[in-house]
Length: 294
View 1 (cartoon, rainbow, N blue to C red):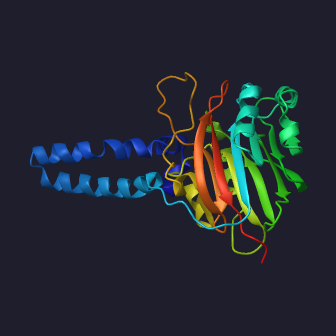
View 2: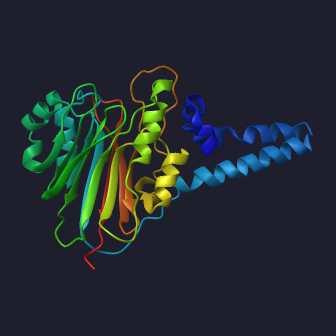
View 3: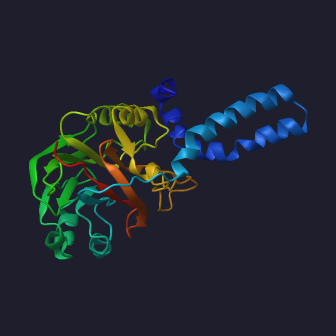
């Protein structure tokens, strides 16, 4: 699979792997009906591989246990054009503690402040930028070590340490590598995903949340997961719920580009996906249980 991702068209096609799994029984059935046994065997192996890769994302296995709870939400604002009142209502209704925003503009900054976001989440690390390049983290808890990663192609990733009471040190990042709307963006897409920090048993607990412009079928994202992350939606059995596109972009099947990736030390209690009026993405909410110090 990594070899497929050297060119733009195969990278885009990989995003639709769940649809291939959905239609994979058809070649098996046709081959069996026409007594093409070798073809049936080959199609059956392909079917088994696709199901093994895709089906576990829809099987819930939420974690138990107790500890400091962190409720997080990530939302792509579509160049700052999402409905600020709807987003703030979602934050309020779900008692969100940490909010990651992508495509965060100066206009969105003003609208969200006017809608009362700062009253709910008073701490922030924000880099508003035009043309969808901005990023922000809003938090109920104090933020420290605030930085901004500038990805190839210009998208920002706001990042900071979050001081959650009773929890181990936590580092969060609002993720937004380059999108693949044109072939010339492929190197920037690769660089943006490759630049994300690995997770491991030592150091701060890590949380990556945002619009990754990649699905779990992309080798780049799977390599990141292997460093020590889990996809929260897959743990909760919601890994096949699509998050883009929710605008009329033509006959593009919907795919899952928005994720909450949590360090393996973090337990996942629940995940849900919500519409945000004015945005072409769905927002992803996750309720997490953080490890305690030591």
